[in-house]
Image 1 (cartoon, protein in one colour):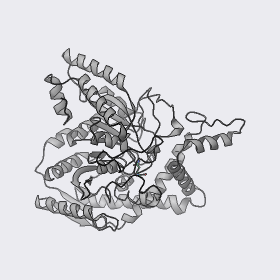
Image 2 (cartoon, rainbow, N blue to C red):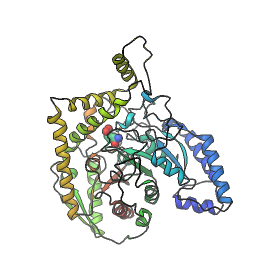
Image 3 (cartoon, helix red, strand yellow):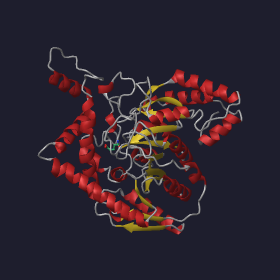
Image 4 (tube, protein in one colour):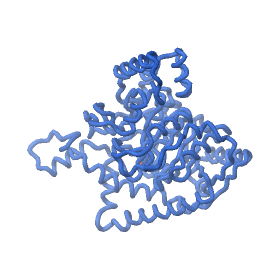
Amino acid sequence: MFHFSTIQDYHTALQNGQTTCVETVHFYLNAIRQNAHLNAFLTVYEAEALAKAALLDASRKAGEPIQALHGVIVGLKDVICYKDHPVSAASKILANFNAVYNATATQRLLDAGAIIIGRQNCDEFAMGSSNENSAFGAVKNAADITRVPGGSSGGSAVAIQAGLCMISLGSDTGGSVRQPADFCGVIGIKPSYGRISRYGLIAYASSFDQIGIFSASLQDAALVLETIAGEDDFDSTVSLRPVEKYTAAVQTNPEKKYRIAYFKEALNHPALDADIQKQSSAFIQKMIQAGHTVEAVDFSLLNFLVPTYYVLTTAEASSNLSRFDGVRYGHRTKQENIDLTTLYKASRSEGFGDEVKRRILLGTFVLSEGYFDAYFTKAQQVRRLLKNKTDEIFASYDAIISPTVPAPAFKIGEKSNDPIEMFLADIYTVYPNLVGIPAISIPLFTHTNNMPFGLQVMTKAFDELTLFQVSQQMMELK
Ligand code: GLN
């Protein structure tokens, strides 16, 4: 019987003849079928996954060397383009749209031998924290199907949680990989802004968006990151810095002691759940006992994070989403004999869901002439202050830790009528996107209500190596 632990073990099993890629694909197709009620996958590429698996098995038997992601079963959030396959950002406005090219991340997965098994449900245009904003219905948390899996990459997180694939790629603009990872008890990493190409990622807020990785182990996240990261002629915001050997970082250096900061205001925040507060604080003590220096630092800007994030991201979204006009592609209204403006309005009103409309309106407002300086410019100034404060902290510390989310997974429907409350729960995750640093949620805890939750680790920009090393040590302390 097939059992998955890490990609490395899977490759050993393949090489020893204990399993095949075809058998593995059958295993996952079956798991996806049996868990259809979770609503994690929107489309499953059954026939082609099996065909690719057969090719990989044949090449292995012919003695060809295996590639880094040979036969690795991957799911893609429905915002990442896979040529000639549907991609809709879980929106009606992109119904029946097929990607015309591969995202760079997709191409690199395929080039490394991965098998893409399907596209995964998410919040519409990656806007949300619960996956309830999908045009294809909510995703359910596999640990308790009455609860949300988090969002916006909820389907991608649940797919790892429930063992429906080995790796999921999601996107993270303000926590959409780390927050569902926290709610589902899996690993979710958002690399530095500019580490992975955004070419072929449907844009939400371009100066925040990053592709992120869900996995069951740190090793696997490291392997996938080192395979898909790095310079790309199709995205001028991608860094030219060489990609380091993250896999080696996870295997070595377990003895190093780190200097770690946490925000005093974050751990004393009134919105923080009491049990998360208690267990996170106890874990800090464990880290200190293990020889690390863990200190509280002042972070008076904490309550500005969420407003700054929502002003800037909605502004960018209102601009990015203007391309969905019912003319060039996507949904077009069936109304006839109407002028062009009415066509735009009707197509967009019919095609977008409520949350997307709310954000386009908000973004248009903060960019409008009379309010631009009061909101947009002001938020940009706060972003600069945050960046300066971050540089100051990393001059003295290797990493910053915080809870990933202030409360564990909530009930489906519980917060749908209160967008502000939903936004406020993003308090810890939006910070790394505002300043461009890498961040990961590692599954360390179980709440008194039996739901999993994680710890967020952050390092300075492009120091994913330290991020993996610190996380590795935290996982061992668990
Ligand atoms: N929950 C956040 C939001 O609704 C994060 C979304 C994201 O990272 N894509 O904007």
